[in-house]
Image 1 (cartoon, rainbow, N blue to C red):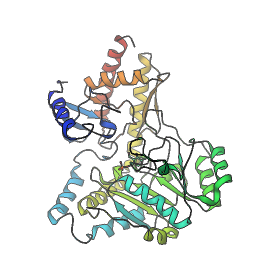
Image 2 (cartoon, rainbow, N blue to C red):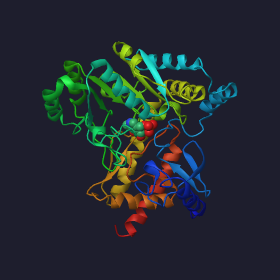
Image 3 (cartoon, rainbow, N blue to C red):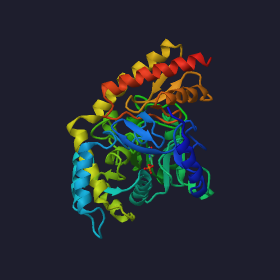
Image 4 (cartoon, rainbow, N blue to C red):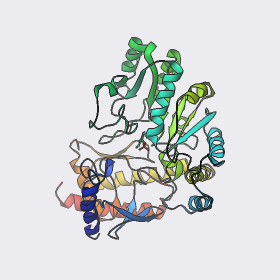
Length: 409
Ligand SMILES: Cc1ncc(COP(=O)(O)O)c(C=O)c1O
């Protein structure tokens, strides 16, 4: 691994003209330690290059946005044809209808779909649909759950005013008694419950739903006339080809997707049941470039690849192989590592590592081997992770454990 001269220099330049230099989970200020490169230059399949020419085997997949590998040739070919015709016009391109039809065929409970550019655009829109339909104000979410950058749910404190959260209630994931109590007290005011398919908080191991969680939440929502909104932005298509609700066997009222939907092209979708279509048509929705035919073509192509190749099942299987092998590799060096959450998007957790020191150090030594493992965020498996790249990564991870052990940690 070469030194990050160009990357560091770019970061210095960025800090002059971009607040914080870089933002979100890639900023060294809040998330990604500085031994990682700050800027990428290119990528193919599961490998990307940073601006200093280092090559990395990737386990973050653009934070989940890439499911079929960087520059997937089938997606890129379809995109190129669309690009030559144009991306944005005054009116939507016909691909929007094709994409809405495709999603309503793919997602069993959906009879309509709308599109935007980011997950946040539509998680925020979805809670407004719930409010419009129920004429109620309160929204329930899980404590520590991320649903986007808007003030009702973002993890930052900057620019926040008290009223941003005054209509948001939070319960601890899997604490159904707490949820029941909330409904006992406020049932006539609760418009919607928004949840991710399982709990994937940053800086903490992932938690799967308890056996009766989803049946219970569904029942509470139905009994109280409250909409159940599934935020499938991160997990979408890494658990089930038909949406993550199928993996956990329940039916939401609305589901929001983004990330893997366009295999790297900016697009999000909210799908819903017929009953909520009138409310959906009342809540204003638009944006600059939201009718981007190129991103929609990417999504359409990506969805076809997912269905034809059973990609969700594949990434679960590949992830299972990788996680089991990584855990036993760790054990061989006397570390107790647990890959929490579903194997297609595992969160690594060293037992007893409450201050995250060990995972940070492990990811640091792994970075010297050219492995992009994130210390505080769940990782992502893509369908481009083939047996060779997984085995090579395990071999490199073995070198990293060796260095970790010899450092005395
Ligand atoms: C579960 C979940 N919901 C919503 C969002 C927000 O999506 P976006 O970053 O596209 O606005 C994210 C992004 O990471 C997410 O993981």
